[in-house]
Every structure is written in structure tokens, then in C-alpha cells.
Amino acid sequence: MKLKAISILVTLLVALGIFGNIMNRIEAHQKEEEAKAKILAAQKLAKEKRDEFEANKPQLLEQVKRLIDQGKPDDALASLAKFVQYKDPDISHVQQLAQTAKRIQALSDELATKPDAVRSLAIYEELKALQPSNPLWPAMIEEIHPRATEARIQQLQAQAVVDRAQAVKRLFSGWDGSVYVVEQAVKARLKDPDSYKHIETKYIDSGVGNIKVFTQYRARNSFNAVIPGTASAEVSPTGELISFSMN
Image (cartoon, rainbow, N blue to C red; front, side, top):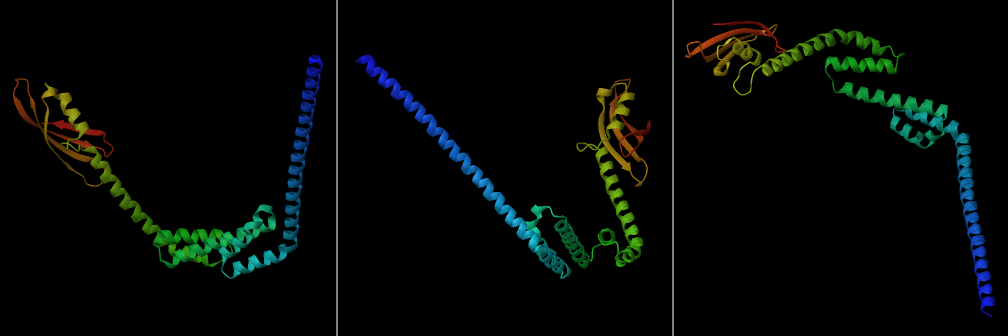
């Protein structure tokens, strides 16, 4: 009896296992079919939308071009936004037209603020690149070019003055006003370099070429006496010692 009961139990368990496998397969198959159905539905919807787009494309292109002509490039781009996904060459073309029109509008608005000659020239050059067939842009470039060139030269000169002033400032110690290369040159010629004490450094800058530096210091001499001394030097704006003498 026990063996028979065990046999029945084993058979039941096997049957349950087989049934479970069958149910799992059925469930997996159902999920697979549902996934396929969703894909097919999405493909069908996409095709319907594509067909609708193709049918309405002439009207859309006409509408977008009209918006561009009316000076409404933002509205034109908004109308095209949901159709860019199709990568249609006609759509890409009018989208580029709208973007160009938007940029031209932005540049024209900037010109209305009366920017300086350098910026105005850059704007007109960009407008010429955007609208090469428009004769107004080359004419404006020719008119403003001399003033822009002069203004640019003045800007470069002013920047050169600022750059030089900053370079000269970097030569001097923020702590005691000494110039490193001059101080090192003095110490190299002293009997007792460790006794060197900086007193004062002055300079002359003509605005071009090298800077003339004059340093006063104290140091011990061969007789162990602390005496004052002076040094003169020419230093380049980049910190190179050009000439040097001591008194």
C-alpha cells in the first residue's frame, strides 16, 4: 500500500510539473504574441502617420514658406518640429530656410542697437554669407570696413597697453617690490649674498621695449661692514635680464 501511495504521489508530482511547464510556455507564448501585436500596431500607426504626412506635405511646405515670408521663422520651425523625424529632404530644406531667416532676423535686430564698427562689420559679413545674392550686404561691408579697421587697430593697441602693464606688474614682488632677476644678479656678485637686504626698487617704463630698473640695497663687504649699494638693469617684459651694472 505504501509503495502504491508513493507511486501515485510521484506520478501526481510529475503531472503537476508537466502541467506547470505547459502553463509557463502558454504564458510566455501569450506575452510574445502581445509584444508582436504591439510592434505591429506601432508600425501600423507610424505608417498611417507617414502616409498622412506625405498626403499633406505640399500644404505644409506652402504654409511654412508663407510664415518665413511673413517674418515668422519661429512659427515656421514650430510647424516643422514634429515632421523632422521623417528626415524628408524637402522638410530639411525649408527647416534650413527657417533657421537662416531666424538668424537674419536676430542679426538685423542687433544692428538696430547700433553696435560698434567692429561688431557691425562682423554682422554684415555674416549676413552676406547667409544671403550672398543680397547686394546690400557687400555695399555695407565696403562702407564700414575702413572705420572697423581703424577701431580694431585701436582695440589692439589698447589691449597691448593693458597686456604690457600686467606683464610689468608681474616682474615686481608683491611683498617688497623687488625684481627677482635683478636681485639674483646682485647676490651673484656679492661677497656675502646672505647679507643682502633690499631697500627700494624703482623703474622707468617708456611703454615699449625693455624696462629700466634701479635697486637700492645693503650688504656686507669684504671688511664685514654693511654698506649700501645700487644696481641698474634693463629687464624685458617677460622677465629676462638684458643688461646689468652695480655701483
